[in-house]
Length: 114
Length: 115
Image (cartoon, rainbow over all chains, first blue to last red; front, side):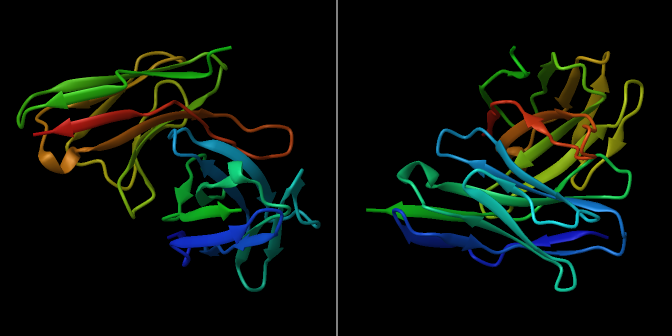
């Protein structure tokens, strides 16, 4: 069975600094995808970034990058130059094999301070 | 482009009452999902429909039923609501894109309270 673990319930970062949100995963399927979603206080779920298990390079989307370390089964989200609007819950999720469904971690609440 | 629309946004029920959460997507996606979100537990999959005409149980299906009415619509029914079903419910839809990703697009959520 697949499992996603986010061990940081809450994180603080100062504005303009970079922050890393941790995510480890467990699956025996060689084909999988890893996702990060943002949930601001308004409640909607916003897709940020995707990494496929066969992708050779780490995914990047603007200020977001995914630090994919396959051997360690980690898929950490790096947010560069944090902004106040980055304050939100962040969820890591995984899809395995040909299944379409996602399994989510418990989330990390990020607070950006001045 | 509305994306995923779910109704109602808020609902208060008494224990034992029934209700249906409605979800519709206009992105021509094949797959649709119902998740529930509880504090400290992330999002947990209740039921999903990989394609029109199919439904499958997720992680927490007990107490729920679903109907994939057509490609656009996927409803979630609580036959006899219990306080443990107090939660925020999210509908989502997805399809495989050119990169092989299966990005879920979520509705705005429905907050359900069972007294």
